[in-house]
Image 1 (cartoon, rainbow, N blue to C red):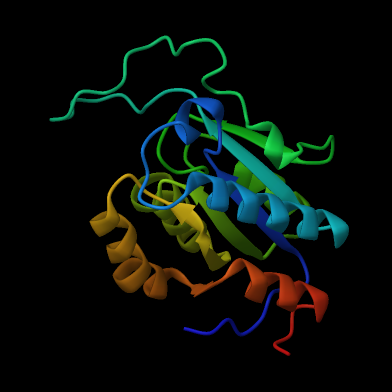
Image 2 (cartoon, rainbow, N blue to C red):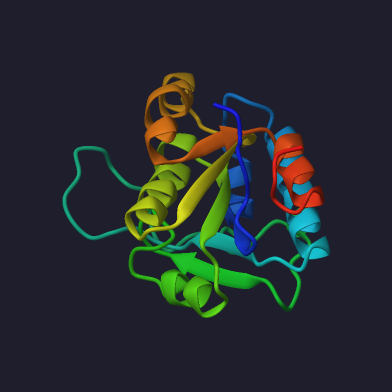
Length: 189
């Protein structure tokens, strides 16, 4: 699906690009994902639009069939990667569930700034990114997914989200298409 537009106050949400996660195996080059997410962050900052940097520092309670990683995490595991060039005006969110909206104040922080749309990038496509996109959609935000600025440990999960889930939650496009929309004031060129 082609991107149609960006709302005047659109925020970028970068999910889980942190030291402990970028070293894990993924189906696409994490270097490329990091470079594209960093490029998006720089473009949003240039246009004075909110940038949200999300890390994960735990998990939701409850039983699961798959074991979870042990806690506490090693030193530095939750640190955002330096390539994101965190700025004082960026919104930092630490989550303890898959999605960035559940159990955080992200919704209220975005609404306070007048945000009506979010662009989402990061890892993992089938968990943190998808959950954040679902929660944003359910909260009433317009959702755009930067599909070349995300990856997953499992190709099937990544491809399924892009082909079947994301079209029901919003619009998808490349980093460059999003940057082009930012340059034209949000309207399709």
